[in-house]
Image 1 (cartoon, rainbow, N blue to C red):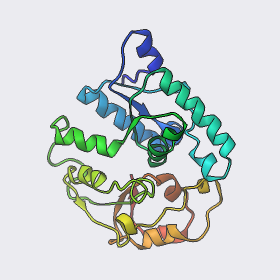
Image 2 (cartoon, helix red, strand yellow):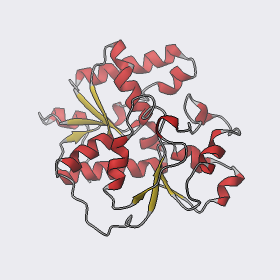
Image 3 (cartoon, rainbow, N blue to C red):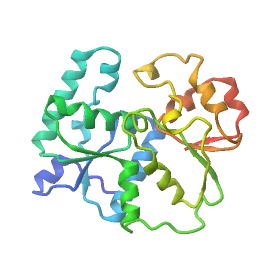
Image 4 (tube, rainbow, N blue to C red):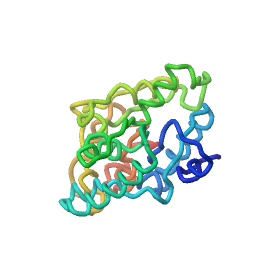
Length: 241
């Protein structure tokens, strides 16, 4: 699979349509890496010219800022902004709601002004434009899928429909949790909480909020749910994808 870096394209005298911001999870977490690879595969398949920063991409600084280390956040942010501006980046697509939020809403105050798109919105546009055509009777046909609204994607940026439209295109049955959209529950991993030991709270509520004991979840916070040692999780015949 061809995944060019910005430095490689610049050396060849080329420029991409979009920069794919991979993020820490998409780079280092084994399950999130599957999302990264799948999205890159789709971009290659439909002929979207894209690039990544590769080793030049730093953490966006969100965990540092949420944990109260503003100095560290600004160090990271300014370095990323300098890199992005040096490459004259205009449009960024990312699969991480935290990366999406901070690049879109907080980097602009430090001199980083970009069009930032969440990958579900980008995929929905590709589907609407006919660039992605899904075959009937795929592996998700007949499956019951529910979607967990990440805080920064939903309440933070009012993106609710795009992920659901993409899931509906899979010819699956989309089932909503009892707590969803603007009334959805935080997974408990934001604000640098993912680096702490698990506490009782929203994860249990999230699982008990499902409309059916057998369900699939497509969720940004897959790591937090998957790492949980909550015994109630064993009651569910579920798959986190």
